[in-house]
Length: 150
Image (spheres, rainbow, N blue to C red):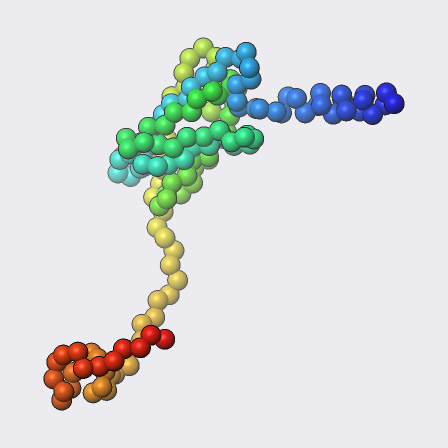
């Protein structure tokens, strides 16, 4: 009977160091990570970019405001990985952001614009006859044609 309890205790002890990594535990000093996200070429703020600490459950992240500013609250000290995404930009991965217990962390991040990759577009045209609504023909202009939806 003691063997399952011992196995459970060992399993729990091995998982404890990974639980809540990046989020401040109760009683621990929580830090704030602040920063800005800007367009790398134009140096304008990127509005609505999401910044997420990688590997946390529950997720810890923030979105940038109209000035491109972000603020992550309740971050535990240590080395964190961040992922930054925004529509129209290449995703950015920050492999190591150091959060110390003594001071607030400031980040200045730059995203590179990405051009959408579209497939080939082909337009075809078929000449309309005299009964087409786009060719009034001998009837003259006006609403003399019936339209049907297909």
